[in-house]
Amino acid sequence: MNLDRHRNPIRTSRRDMLQNAGAGFGALALSALLGRSSAQANESPAPPLGQPHHPPRADSVIFLFMEGGPSHLDLFDPKPELRKLAGQQLPASFGKPITAMGEADSPLLGDQRKWAQHGEGGLWISDWLPEHASIADDITLVRSCWTNGINHSGGVCQMNTGSARAGKPSLGAWVSYGLGTENRDLPAFVVMEDNPGKVINGPRNWGTAFMPAVYQGVAFGNGEAPVRHLENPKGIDSARQRAKLDLLYDLNQEHLHGRESYDPIDARIESYELAYRMQAEAPEAVDLSQETEETKKLYGMDDEKTRTFGSQCLLARRLVERGVRFVQLYHGSGSKWDAHSGIEGNHSGLCAASDKPVTALVKDLKRRGLLDRTLVVWGGEFGRTPMSEKGNGRDHNPFGFSMWMAGAGLAGGRTIGSTDELGLRAVDEPLHVHDIHATILHLLGLDRLKLQYIHQGRPERPTQNEGAASKAILG
Picture 1 (cartoon, rainbow, N blue to C red):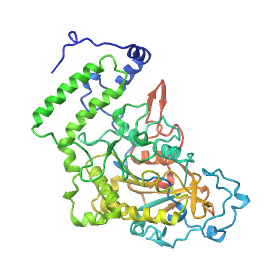
Picture 2 (picture 1 turned 180 degrees about the vertical axis):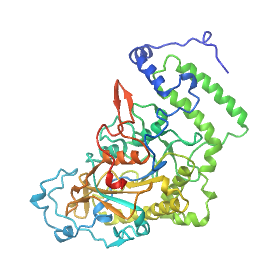
Picture 3 (picture 1 turned 30 degrees about the horizontal axis):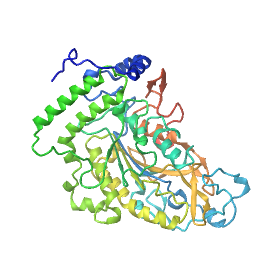
Picture 4 (picture 1 turned 120 degrees about the vertical axis):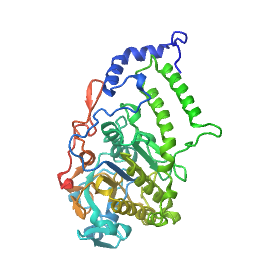
């Protein structure tokens, strides 16, 4: 259906006129950059690069985000000296660190964990993560991460976008922009929360900021229907559904005329088209009933405490199996890993809920031959301090914490970098968030400096011209 624009003139508001006058040339540049006109908006946008800058070692990423800040001192980074000095003040030689809650003068808190070395590489893992022991030789553990975000909003924002302040595209959006999708019937970038709607900063974490909105993450829900409304309404067949979308497309094009600089309209048009295509592809992709009982049990779907995150980890595997580029899972949505007090109860419960699903994901990818081409990343926005808070908790620590990677051809069973003897600051091979992002991009075949988007006349890049891919991680 094509509407006659001469019989349906567009009324331009004062706001539209001012917006187009100020941004019209930018819209022309954007159109050229995307390589399509608004009349082609019902087609999947071609990625501006299309090809990686160098041979990739991974085709997709699964980022397991433990929101709230898991304690490296109780999970992956044992500190005998911290136990020895427990109850005392932080030695003067460490200086007085800035802390979120002002607990720098609080007594040191030793861990209560049992530690053991696992795998041929002898990776240290605490008894809070017993299942991790079985994938020790697949893990590249980085003990020397650091960030600028000292609170949750800034920390989560930086781990997702590279900036502690709002206004930058998310890492997943950069990947979607740079590489496009391998399956046009599914989103290139998918996000799942174990507590939907609770993650701090909300959709900003998977947004596109100044880039076209079509590259943002698509949020999937929990339960048997992670994507709602995929079924046609009763009595509506595919032909009628297609006709309705064609009409909606034409109406949206009329609305877009004269507002070409406002890309959310373009994104909305594309979202309708993607939703239509997903009606054929997504039901099968998200149907976990197709999995064997052995596989469901592997992920802990037979246990109430692991069922939610286990289902999401299994769904993440099914999505990357079908060409989704970037999948991000939030565990502890709502900053539940934020153990300012009662760290024993807090972390023991969260570890019990995530340990089995996480290790199952790595094992399942490996046995299906997918791990070599999939990068799995585990971590939070920061770690926890060696100083106590409220007697039995730990404050935020952005100065040194642990993350790990697996897959993408990385040699496992290794520990990269270290923190000082009390676990306060990264001292050997310190890796900033920009370095971590640069490493992830490099493994996907993307160069952090060549991947750019022109915004307001200047090139924007995913790591803001900072950081570098870690040679130690890449091996």
